[in-house]
Length: 482
Image (tube, rainbow, N blue to C red; front, top):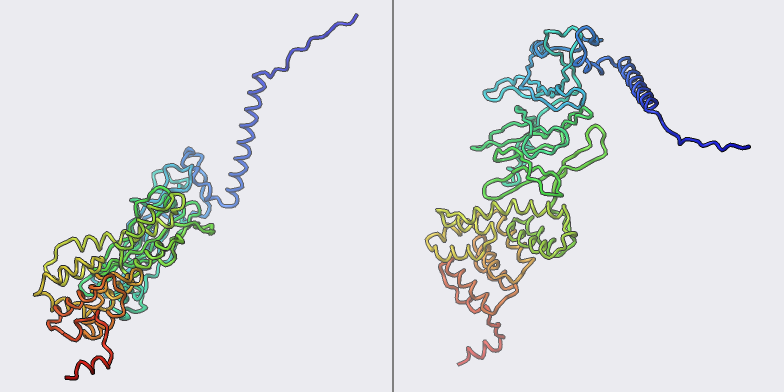
């Protein structure tokens, strides 16, 4: 007789689960211990951070501790070589285990000779990591050098480049200007690593130009690196632009001189370089981000100083463009144009004591009709305005030429083209140039000539009938015959 055997379903006992868990934990501890042992053998200092969690009797002894120094010992060693330490800056630690520890950035200073102001120049940047020795009870922390960067200064020629471009003269020399101040960027700075501004000041006439280097510290690789040199004729430090959604972090440097705005913008971009995978690349207005005729024209106008007109073009293009086709690069170019336009618009909207200055700020902002109105209603300022046009180095003429290239029939622009030529050459050449310009209406040219005569103070009857076709020699001879 056969008996059927009923088998109970397979079950795992809780005791077995517990045993497996204990074995897993033990295996993990063994592996971690082996890893720490290898690290300790290769470099005993690499596991010194464990001293933060070990009791005094079990702390790991430091091998080669002679290389480690307290801050006071480090200061004394530098003092013997004629150097000092500047204000330290705490950096976020790249060690997740050492939550209470921060890397320390120390600028090394060297005293300049024959100096009255800012005499301590930064000649080196060092990053130290605080560590605890086995016998550190009651003693200050030791510092372990983990990164350093020599600093040589910035060529004077580079610092004074904006002045040279504005005045057309070669200025400065190749001597290195000192970097004296180190600050950490806090507001709006990118979250990747630590961003620092190392700067100095240079007097130029009655103004003080600022210059410096943008230094980046990558905690993951304990790597210090200079990403950018900058200069500002008006003495302003670079600022991080407020970041819109989908936009890259952008650093802006103010290089303006006088009434002409000039800003340089740099975006944080990735690169294939393990020690520091970031770089700062300039936002260019030369290469259009969109293959669109109006967009291309807008950047052309911007490069020639017509910032507000260019901004109008760009806003019109963006309004007609599908959002998916308006790229981050296009927005970056538009943001840079807008930053310039804000300055020229503010200048033109303010009252000025001098009529010539009022004309100038309107022309810089591309307010041609408004500038003409000021000229017509200020007869006492016409000589001053004429002198302004006569002394112009080309910044106004390039605006006239650029806009007439995009829109040749603009009468208000033709007016100022003729006025500039009359001031710098004579009325004959101004009229000759005007004759070559296309007309929007039959009366346009006559109106411009009328204004030229008013400014010139004489009425040249031979040039008054510009729209009248020249008569043939035969007709002239017939008319002259009694």
